[in-house]
Length: 289
Image (cartoon, rainbow, N blue to C red; front, side):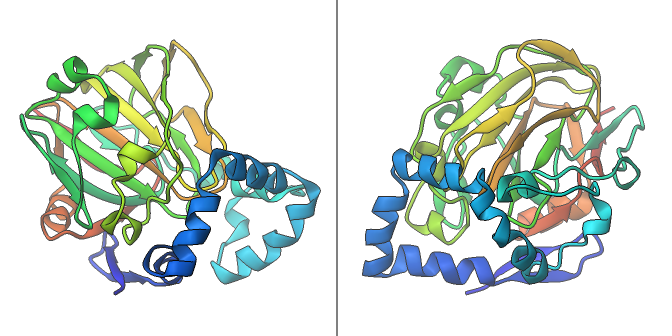
């Protein structure tokens, strides 16, 4: 079954190519045998080495063609490996960050769904349950976000895989949580709770306009590293926070009660179980007055 995604203009977008591949991995005996092999960290490291080598360069042109990537938006350079291409930078003139003081902006290109956080919230993505405590493995920190919002930004392989800070502020050290690498595609979530099985890294931030927030980067199949640029530091809205290497990935943003109001189209779509396509730096909500 195709997954339904909607853009900000309300047009429905159907994703099929990735779903077919993952249906094989998760819904067939042969696929599940393959999955046991590829989900071993040693296999992920081997794939990572290949994607960083010149041998992978031949994959680039085909990927661009298959996914209709407009390379005029990206820096004009020769990519020596697939990972160099995958982590390509947008040209400065193609990056538009909303700088309105009270605007909440998207930290990345993605498909977004928003959930309210309650004492015993269980969030579902294609029937796979998780909660904030399991995500952070920190019960006390999770409690601080009761009554707030959980924003889930799902990146697919054709997305821009660098992400930014969504506001001005300061941050603490990055906290890494070891996991087993599984894809974050919704088909796989029928059988796997990916937050329990995926490696992730979170940062507690004190932001100028939205108070205390937590941003979590979640790795997926074949990702060797989540590459955050900074340890404890101060930051500005729109500054690059980090990037994902090859694979599908997810960014989760936790906001406290009364910190923000999310735009109505995104909330309406989320209420219907539909993801909304958002772009890096795009306004997706505002500070709650």
